[in-house]
Image (tube, rainbow, N blue to C red):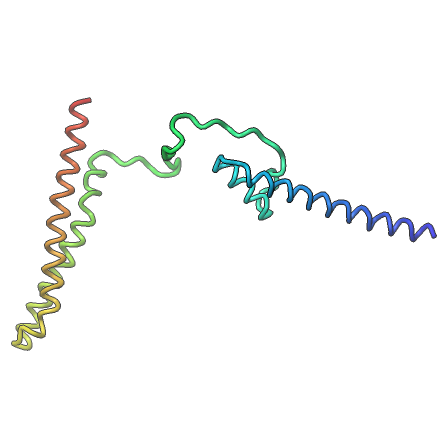
Length: 158
């Protein structure tokens, strides 16, 4: 008889723990329906998914300074080195240069196909693609130059 009561007590303890978790889960679901803060909502969702252990504890939400609709300022990743200004300016020209290179390659392929086969209709797809890439490349370089000139003008004013 003593053995039975111990095993029954263990079962009751397990049942109470499960019931407590279910009550906490119900409380979190009710709280999720009323919370307006997106960070707080994310914490509750993570807690409901079982990903965050500390989310069941009540913590006051931090007040967000400034406007509510503004986007948060991204902090710089500490592991990445800071690029010098000249490297940042050159980074604006990477995509336009890729467009120009692809355009040039397609134009050269079109010329090779035309020389080899002697028909323009065989080289026409490469000719069109090369011309489009080349045009996009030049427009992108022009836009990158304007962007860099705008950055330089802002620095001179400051």
